[in-house]
Length: 385
Image 1 (cartoon, helix red, strand yellow):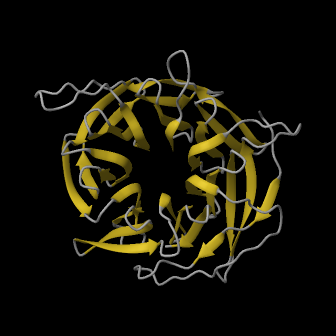
Image 2: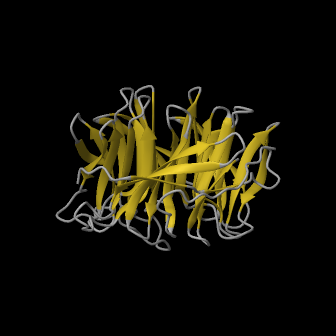
């Protein structure tokens, strides 16, 4: 389907900044219905980036209609926000026919020229799809069907743009239990297995073996022409990283203590790789930093059931590494940041319901914005952080 769908002006609820956070910035709440209203249960599996003019933009899954949505924020001087919304894929087409259930695991990157790329899953067909928004509107197609005779891929899609602004996507192939990578080659994608994985064979009789299952929760960053992919190896219970260039990748074990490595997110700053991730054994938020061959790791938050849905970012005020993450005990979004060499922890939002799912953070014009899925109200939450 290569169809441009109509734009609808509407608004999210923009909530005031987090209770007790380091920022004193507050944003007024507002809601406007200036077009077709949003239905409930949209906003999960969201991804956020910034348009060239500095406007925050969000790609998200509309669970009501089974579609992929896209919205650009307009933030006024008084703090109110309204959004222009576009239907990207999975909605009824011009002939009023359902085009499928599409939009989970969305990952979006916006190029310097304003081109918007989104990777996501076709839920019904189990394939990896992509959509691109250019001067002519939206086009979408299949990026990768996965391996084997039948498809069940497109899980945990993660996209990065290379030096030419072209997309590279990693995703988990559930049918083959491996990590795949798809690269844009001018008119479409070419895809291959990035990491095959190994079976876990225990060395003692008290342990249970496991078939290879590698690549869930993958996140990709491209820096200096090198592709860095952090991912979870379920068979070994390890956080690992694949790094290299097309056709030449190496695998690095970052943390193997217990069952660790779900929900990783990574950034590279000054040559140092920073990764936030979940310790499944101890239900902690952990942090690893270093470079291939040299890693250190530490526990950042040892509260009960913390550390999933991590998003790592640089605080524009201190230029220090900060994390947004999920508190599963209290169903909150939490924030961790460094000050004076110590980790500080705070709750961002969640007292009014179950929030903190699919956390995303971006910075634009010195202002940091956070978004997550409000599971209680089945809507997207968005705020100045």
